[in-house]
Length: 383
Image (cartoon, rainbow, N blue to C red; front, side, top):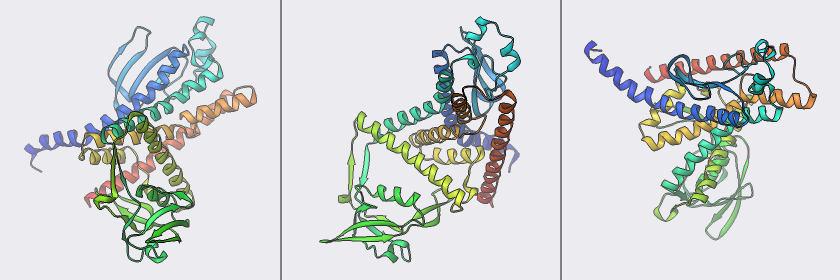
């Protein structure tokens, strides 16, 4: 590479890859932490810091209530630090809590009622789902919805569909007894039902048939060259103009559709984890920060609206990840509160300390594994 051209290359790398990643992640993280922050303030918890990112502070300011709002150098997350916390993971500072007087205890998170602490912790993931709903609702209002009739336009040779006897021109009426009105509805079953037999109700001319077919786990490649595993029957839609209906959605219908989109992500995530455990999915598909950055830069080439849609999907994913019952994450804290409610007393400080260490180790191991996948994926692209 020409040395004189290096600054220009770095500029376009920054604009094309770094900026989209930081833009999307900052939006998602900000709303997650804002959920914690707003419910904490509502419960009269004193907030020491609201940070987007980790590491050295780049810019910051104090508000009138003494909260330090700051943007940090490493844009891979964020945190809200409450009064009485030892660090950004919300681990209680036992020495500081024991030394507080009655007035100081009023503002300490750890001294709040159990239901109030649970509400503050749950507010982060809930804010992610709300953000996703707002994004998807706006996109559905703007674009409307394109519905493709569930009519078979192509059948892949030697696929599960061809071997089951499905033919071009067949109209799919039901899958496992559930009515089908859009071709995408079929995909919703096949993507999460690999190696599980489906019963399709088919209209073929004047004849109604019941056909059993089993989607196969198949490797596919998206438009950017990324490989992934998914369940496929081996059929494609008939995209003739008469089979496509474009529907404008009002605000209410768009909101309901946004909830469907969120549920689709939740359902597919659950099925991915299940298939990962039983060995149907490859753990190499897990993405870390580099992989998310790569995916974000790829989607950014399609336009700002597609990038905003990706922000909605990542918001759901981050909300789900934070609900995992792992100490350090929000879900781990909620498990502690549930146990406290059942036992009538909190777990001992030593038990919580060990749990936090185990949880942090699990998160770090998962991050390192996912990052190694990202590095291998990047080398595969350039190799």
